[in-house]
Length: 202
Image 1 (cartoon, rainbow, N blue to C red):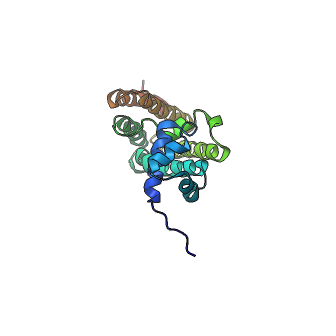
Image 2 (image 1 turned 45 degrees about the horizontal axis):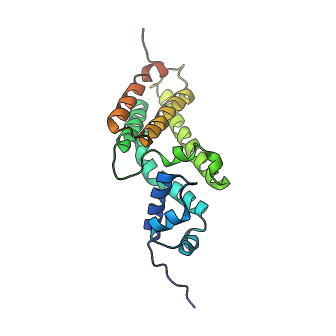
């Protein structure tokens, strides 16, 4: 006998679950919260996604492929490393000013208390953060080879600085900071560029 077809859209259900995890975090997002937002019952959730942890892991991947990809587009597309970094910060500021969606970064917020995450989910979140740092560092190393940075510049240190700023902006957004404040933070951080890049002249 053929199995009963699903009566819900899996992609839409996953998108709804993402918003719950984004707003509440893994530990505080109950199965009831999730099923209510997804419009399904608990057995359907487990049949379609396996477990709450598996659902969260899929939500993290969806976030990285959508929200994350949008924020980090400049890292790939900007013509210079400076514009790539500035583009990331300004995109983060703009996201912080959008209404009708959770504020902050799902990955950064989830990583604040890793002990609250199951092992596989914790590894996934750490991997996303590691990949983000690696992408920024690689962009800066390419820029150094191309002469955009001085020979004394440290791409790893620059990447750590700007990723720290970007993550801090996402926490301020979660606390209610608007796009004006976040944009000012981005502009202030970019004032450090010449010194970090070894381009400051006496």
